[in-house]
Structures are given as C-alpha cells and as structure tokens.
Image 1 (cartoon, rainbow, N blue to C red):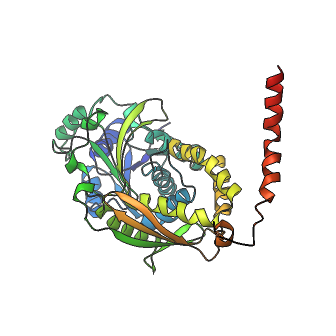
Image 2 (image 1 turned 90 degrees about the horizontal axis):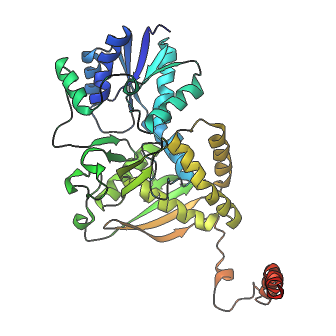
Image 3 (image 1 turned 90 degrees about the vertical axis):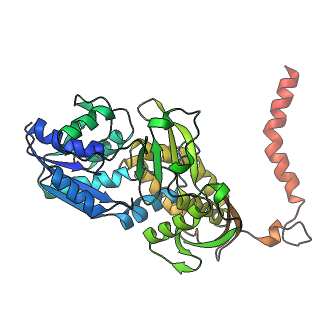
Length: 400
C-alpha cells in the first residue's frame, strides 16, 4: 500500500520529532502532526511551531481538556478503577481519546495512515492501535519503533543532531515523563532499578509530605449521580474542578505512587506517578457511595473493578465489554449524590464526614442505644438459616 499522507500523534518530544523526519524519508509521504492538549502544561503553540519546522506540512492542536475529564476520567472514576490495586490509570485513560481524535483528523485530511511514537515494548502501542482499528478498521498503522533501525534513545539523539532536530532530553532529566490533567508519570532511566528511591527533585505536582504544610486543610466535594460537581460549594467545570483539586492536594503531598506493574505485553515495569486530584476524588467518591449505594449493588460493582481497570489499562476503551460495564456502572451511580468533607494533611487524605439528601444510612437502625425499629430477636432465625449448610457439612464430616 502506497502511503501518501500520515497523521502522527505528536508530542514535541524526541521520539515524535525524529519520526516526522523518518516518515518523510522512509515513506516519501506528507506528514500531518496532531497534538492533543490534555492539560500537560506545555506551550502548545511552541509544539505546533516545532512540528512545522521539523517537517510537518500541517499541525493540528486540539484542546481536549474538558472532553478528557468529562468523558474519560469521570466515567473511570465512577467505576473506581484501580489497576493492580494501586495505579489510577492516568496514562492509560488518555490514549483512547488521543487516538480517537487522531482518526477524526485522518478522516478530515483524507489521510491513509496514522502513526505514533510508542515503543514495541510498552502498553501505549496497544492502546493507540486498538482504538484506531475499533474506529477505522482499514487504516494503515505505522509504528516506527517496530520498523526503524534505531535501538536506543542515544541513537535517536544522534539522528536528531544530524538533521538539526532540537533534542529535549538532558542529563538533568534521565527518565521519561507523560503528563496530563489527571496525572504525571515517570519511568525509565534511573527509575529502572526498583530498589532505587526516586530523587526528591523529580516530583512536579506534589510537595514531599515532609515539606507539606503542618496545618491540615479541610475541603468539601459535592457529588451528583456519581460525578464531582463542586469544591467548597463552588460549581466548577470538570477540567477546572480537577485542576483545582490538583493544586490543593498537591500542596499537601497527596497522590504519589511507586509501583512495579504488569504490562499487557508480558513484562514488569516500574512506574512512579503523581495523581493528587484523582486520589482525592477516588477517596471522596467511595465515601459518598458508602451512604448512598445499596449493599449488593456496591458489592457487585466492586467485583467488576479489576476487570474494568484491566480493560482500561490494556486499551479496550472502545470494546463492547467496557461499554457494557460502563452502562451498568452508570446505572448504579444514579443517586450517588451528596457531600464529602476531607482532611488533607502531609500526604494523607482522610474522610472527615459525609452527608446526602438520599442517604441510605439510618441512625435509628444503626444505633447502639435504645430504639423501637429493629427487633434484635429476628437475628436468631436469620443466623440459623445461614448456618444450616455449615451444620450439615460439619455433621457429615464428623460421621465419615
């Protein structure tokens, strides 16, 4: 298949900057750069300029911050998704949106191929390409890391210098990062030793707990049908709400995670993450659910969390099973409405209170004091019925 025009998911970093030149040399094609603004706090106009200077014929820069939080982060938070009990999936959840918008631009530009800078060892290649094929089955995908002769960052740097491409990697930053409005990740380089503690000056979004304020801060987050809508009584858009919580929680050193995770491709890798606002929202959401969700519905949803998180991590956002799970989860979230009060202190996010106009918590039932609602004698028959099978089994074992 002759490639005429390629849309590249472009970040402005070393890999994708080299890819523009490499695509033009290798495929003799036009390259259109696409940069998604997901709140990575970069000079997006400079990224666009760099893409054009590096050889792209066009550069699309799209502000996706609100869509990212409302249509990707919030649905994931409604599911309480956590991969392997620790990772809040900040990089994973960004890839399907980037790939979706990339396909839209490819259709608009009548391009016959798309490309990305993910390596052949990681998860991102899978996340990008599963989305491409889900949305445009016949599209040609060019994954340079699986084709070209370069085998290291050093060889990329040599190529970049040869062709006058600015190199952003320095000795002061011997690891790779990925940032969006939900989190920032660090991996590779000095972090490849799982015994080595991350350098203190590496962190971007959070203060170290030791240097966080010595006075706790209380905040209140209001929820409506499973989504956070207010901070301290002020209504904010999804992106602005998350940004606000990043600032508040980051100041108190909340949201750092260091883990060795299992990649979809089969290897283990070490990642360090900062997810300050997301950590607070995860804890707050659990708190409002505790007084508004029916027990069996809560337990059913919780049993689905590992599978949901796995689907997001593996890149199956646009799969029928993830979409079906989302419908069940969102149905369960109707009525998850209320306010949570949180105490933030030196890396800790502590629930200080929760209330809801539709709370299922009944103080008259729960009290240890005198009441006339619950007949405690009813528990005797309940226990005997639940013990029946245990008694039968025990008698059978005793007689054998």
